[in-house]
Image 1 (cartoon, rainbow, N blue to C red):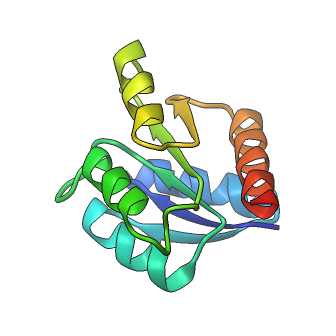
Image 2: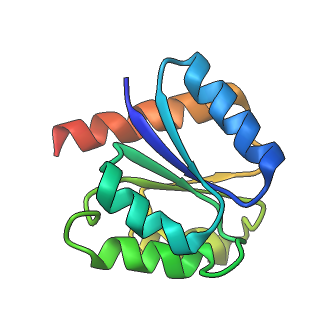
Length: 125
């Protein structure tokens, strides 16, 4: 299965993400803020990154921009998972290079499907 980097400052959300993803057979790497996402992504080369938008330090927007500007992380699919889900947020995320946008709250089935879709896209690239 896929290696997923989960970036969310909420311990509750991270526990749920990790539980669902590990139950689906994925390896999960966790981080709690945007400032460590790029470093972890470069070191770990995950298949998919789950990224919250509202985090301390560098927020998700800054982090997404950094990921899409770095050569070794440019092609890693990033799925934004956020309670910010206006049309403007979705459009901005896609323009910045996000692979997908999964509004909170999400269902376990939706999460697993989106991860599978993103990891297949990564494998095909």
